[in-house]
Image 1 (cartoon, one colour):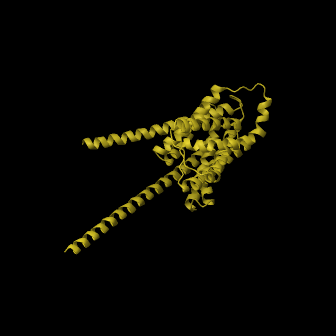
Image 2 (cartoon, rainbow, N blue to C red):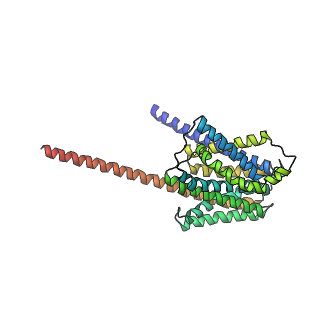
Image 3 (cartoon, one colour):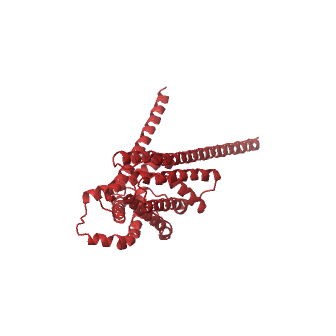
Length: 347
């Protein structure tokens, strides 16, 4: 009875920890999104410079990652050749910089709630790009599910009260670049046995992002900032915003490392609903019934997609257990046969 209770306590503790990691990630992701919206929106803090804001994040995160790895040695840097860095990390860094730039830019033109609805297209983009790059197998059932998600998002877009074509283009571009980055991480890094946690990821990728972002910044935002004599760097606003962005990366590592990527996907749906509710009740963004109906359809599609992935993971684990059991049985059989032969020789 004591042993059963100990096991029960262990399971309860694991569940509580999992929910804690989910709550931390939702809170930080929620905070970063709302904070970025506050800084970039012309009706709020009125600092519409998304490239500069992204560069501040990357500069802060890369500096802190270098200090944590080189000075405090919190984690060991990954062994990586120059060729691997140029062929794998640099393309991923370029895509990440474009994704961050476009997604932050979208907050200037679109509401927080509508952006979260458009982000429901992420599974569609990841699957489609995975099929194009031959990382995923085309399945008509999965593609039908992807089309249902797209249809739901299209309805949500149709019902958007403050629809902005340029903002939608920017957010869809951000989704496409982020999906491509996720697929390339699997192809270029995971296939080579290179696994980057958020600290090592920022250590290698953030400086690369900073370099890529500096090119459009010089031509697009630097001339405007230079001519704006009233501009002053607010260390409190941008410092706390950067700390939140760095903490979010660590939270992703905690959530995925201690639970799974699938848990993060499910938690992401919960976060989106919270953001939509917050956007409607606090920021006073207009959320129409057609918006909610369309996003509801997309939500069901994403939920079904996550369910299918969970079933596939369970089937894969079960197959591994069967294979391990067969291998163990084979070893036992070999041992018995060899023992029988030894006994025959002795006789």
